[in-house]
Image 1 (tube, helix red, strand yellow):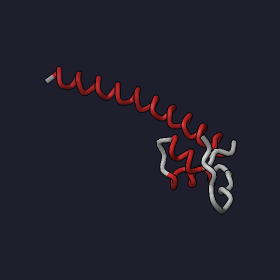
Image 2: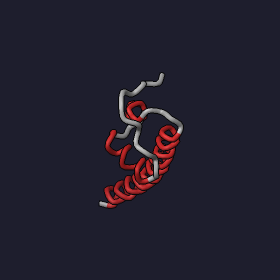
Image 3: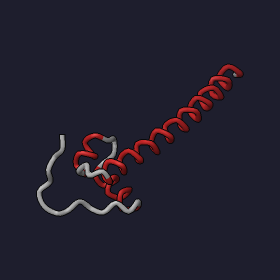
Length: 78
């Protein structure tokens, strides 16, 4: 039984280590998304290049004070 408990402890440790790395990566990704929006990259392009949905990007953008894109046809940047 000890081997199974040791495996469980090791798996928990690996999970916690990768969980912290994932959270750090997510924080960096959100900073990049906000920088792109503030820099004029269209929201549709930000969505295409990021792992986040349009709704989530809008929610984060509004919470961080990024104004909505102007109404009308959107120009896709390359």
